[in-house]
Length: 257
Image 1: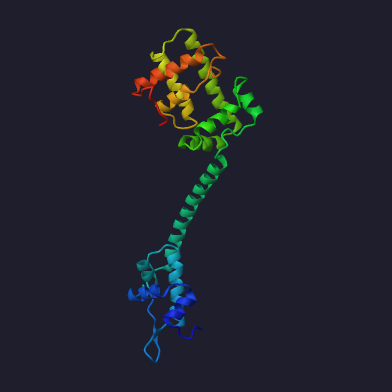
Image 2: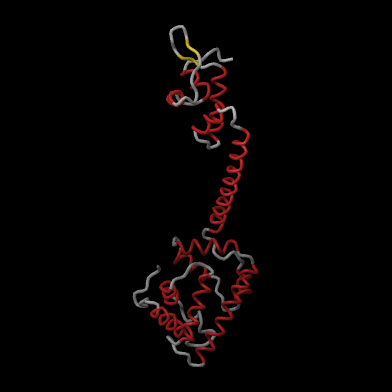
């Protein structure tokens, strides 16, 4: 029993502000039903119980006007309101859990890059693969949105996923080597097709624009492609530059964007 509480006592009991109770009184949501001999309005046990019900509904996200309808309309079904609100809360929980998992993946991925041992990397990508390339890429691109995107995708890949990606690169490298040996000219349709295949493969790791592709190729050293065929690296850089130019990118001024 509350023995009739003043507005200050009621606010303290239920853990809300006096201002809130004044507002609820003004809109007719919770009106104190009693008065002291001095004329002060006080809250009865029933009033306090109503306040608690309002708090529960408000916590569920129901608007104050709808709460009043539920509490005061004899034909309103409070159970139906709760069931509907429960369904909405379940959807919100599912959505938040999905966001939480995404954040966890990003935290797990941040700064990790390829999640394979050096031995696995060499086995999958071949003898020409250099494990220090990942560290070099992180030093160069860490902090960019593209590195974050790459790290997040890398963190969720299985060994089989990496094998598939390596197979794509291997096929591309074979076709690049053949094109170079047979005299395919940078800027030709066949060369541009190869450049687009390379960009598409990179885009599986992060969204790669033509300008970004130029920046990547610009940093290729002979050990990238020359083990397949001497001169292949420089030729491929020319292929990427020529293809970018056809898409409105000046290779000389290309930026990481």
